[in-house]
Length: 247
Image (tube, rainbow, N blue to C red; front, side, top):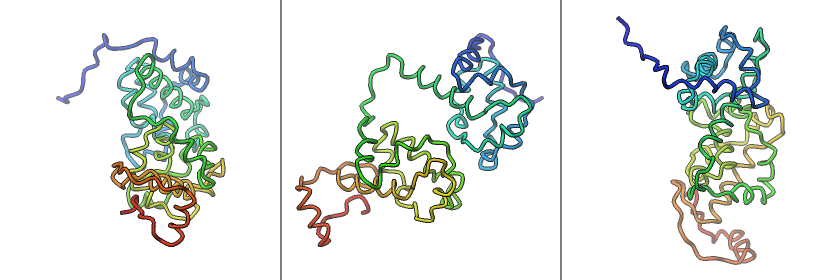
């Protein structure tokens, strides 16, 4: 006999699907009858067979809110729209996943104290740099990650994940992410990006900011002497500035 997990109906939230549908992006969830066409077409499932949009929607319709909130696929889902092109009900899976994320963020942050680990000005300091100004053009669709050749080396390399963490203010996580150093100038991501975001330039902005603020590659902060910008530029030109970030 198969050892299957038993669903406790006392833990179901019958209003969950309506909460998702109340978000403009999530209205399509009430049209879905879980035929599975989305999962068959999903390119993310080629990365991990457990990524299953049909399963997520089924759980949402049943009211398994906490299981849906714990799903990694909710954050992985990208804007390729291959699922939408095959859906007989014209359900926008990406929109539904966005709505689920919004529900989770609202549930976790409503009334919660501000996290000491978040740097809310982080994204603005990156955008101040000429090479970092594209950060606010990105809406994290995932096209860059889908076409990134660095993912052939490691599935964990994800420019989309780095940008999401920047926007959230997870500075130490960004500075410790190996993709920031690995990213190269093949510009395949730029060819795929609907917003024209240059990922290699953004990674350069991150490296420069990390070096300026005295962060190491493993996300540790080292207090260093404050040098006037003009003097620092001259020292950099002469090769006299210690490159803390790439040690």
